[in-house]
Image (cartoon, rainbow, N blue to C red; front, side, top):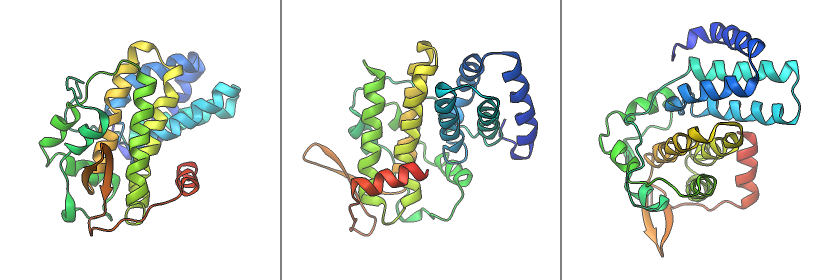
Length: 239
């Protein structure tokens, strides 16, 4: 796992797996192994897998099975685990939990690759503790929806500065949510547990404050330009 030069080998492996077993079985087995590396290539292994599964749910074809193999291969080859293991033992709502995530502030260089960015998380020991501030949810789909909504609010005020970074606070949790119906319920809690680190790692790039009980993110320079819903949806579709 995590060796980018082996993506072709992973592709061949998953093609064999999908030829020998139904795709939902392969998906369940490998999402369980890959989910700690949810930030692989800036969450694009996860996102590509979710797109492939959506297509297969509509109709199973050889080309769509091949795309699922490619998606899982990409995720495996670019696998990179986040620091810590989320335990969901806290008591804070999502927006307050995100407020506890440490910040890189002006030390963050947006030119770094997603791989280098994840390495930066290892230098912030407060990150795993912030993730553990979240409790286990009573309704997982609702909680993932709330996490996606929090990500959209993050994007709305940070898009002018870091558009491609903050849009992943939306697309990552949304991809997790779209996969839930295709995975065993026993995996759902784990899926949600790794959703907050996705949004939290994005929060690291900015500064945050709370106003009137709602999560409000402020640009590093004190500004922040709101985007319309259409602009957010356009970015999400492009990602």
